[in-house]
Length: 148
Length: 104
Image (cartoon, rainbow over all chains, first blue to last red; front, top):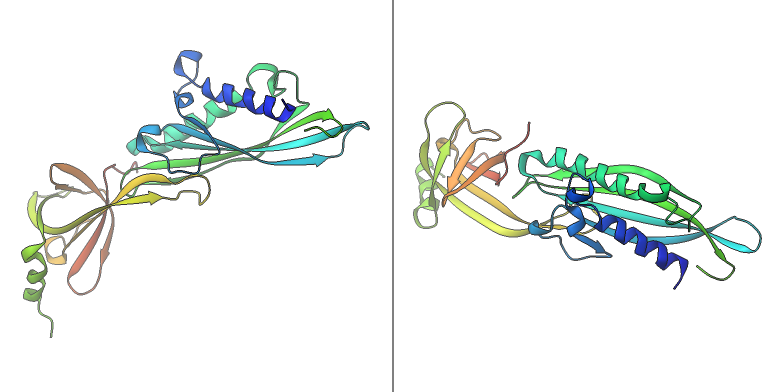
């Protein structure tokens, strides 16, 4: 299994651990999807979609391939008039989950994790209130040459 | 020539009763032409859309001269909150609705 897949498996597990019983403020971990393009249903919120859109090769130590794995996490929530507040709570849960464990080291497989664009949010009330937020970050890790 | 009474023709066959509950004053039953089609809401313009509906009520402007955002229309036992009010200038008003109250 590639290091990239191992890191993604860890990301998936961390997001699915977002449960109130685990000390988080939401149960968004019940609705975690990878690369989902179909519409989110009302019953699937709060929910999370993640995509590992780009693995960029960056300069690193000689003899290794250093990768910047770009992850986009889309957060969805619908809590009526409290949707803005619930979106802030969900964003906090996701950031906490990413930083859990070895502080962004992904079981010591990565060198660092960097939040890149903060959190962009949109709320719409037509029909029913719903909100979406986007969190983007890079996981920097080294792999042996010609591996990812 | 278009007269106010001609507008009534639009509400003869296809309209339903709606209870209009203003913030101030007395609730009243008015006729509206109501649609509640399926809709996909694109929020950030990327990622997945969100399944929703697009409730719209068209009524006579004379029935709702002062209607405003977040006032209530009850239609078929469902409570809708007015999201936006669009008068067309010919005596008709389109109300964009939400099942959720605005938070501010």
